[in-house]
Length: 270
Ligand SMILES: Nc1ncnc2c1ncn2[C@@H]1O[C@H](COP(=O)(O)OP(=O)(O)OP(=O)(O)O)[C@@H](O)[C@H]1O
Image 1 (cartoon, helix red, strand yellow):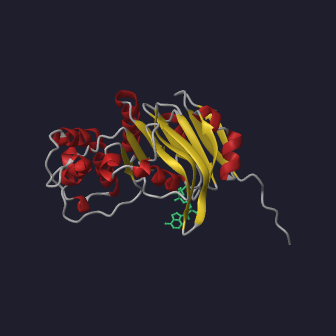
Image 2: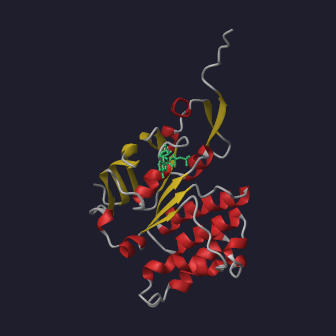
């Protein structure tokens, strides 16, 4: 195994109530690299990400951390110091201030009575600044808009200061400016802090812009893994999404996708 791989899923079969929805999937997240998971609704992206975060127990296969043993064997706090996950939806606590929610990200570092985390305030402040929620530190989270709340949850994950960051659709609910800023943060985490990032994205152009590697899922299997140029091809995307999709390189040097329409025109019988 490549020793730079921070978190890996090997031959993972995952399901609900005994029914497999992900079949033999493999994925590797390495320090300083961004891996984007893309694919149609229901193709298994969130399930795979949740298994990497230990929130979903595999039917078979293994999740390994730092090229070592089974990630499920670690104590919860030890795992939480190394891996964080931004999920699609979380219950919003009532009447709790933004800064207290972000400080919750420090839970793996605290002792039994909330002690022992001298670096905590520094990490909380940094995470709030990065995500732009420092200006709303004293507000109650249940008063925030969907986009503001999304940034608070991201700040909570970043305050956790982990080497692996997993993000499930982090740009959902965000206006254009914050979509771009979140993707910038994702790149910064990898480039400046050597974080291994795994991110589920629906927007293929965003995936092309931010990712070093793209994992394309279809019907619960990894259909292709590789560079954006290798995976985000017109043929592969058209096949997987069941829609004619054109791909071109834009002025910014990144790939841009354009859906055209269905492969086949519907014939009308009388
Ligand atoms: N809690 C659950 N119980 C039963 N089936 C589930 C559950 N969560 C997801 N599934 C099923 O597992 C399959 C994969 O779902 P998953 O959410 O991983 O896909 P996804 O690619 O993330 O989809 P989306 O893009 O819509 O978020 C789907 O068929 C879905 O209906």
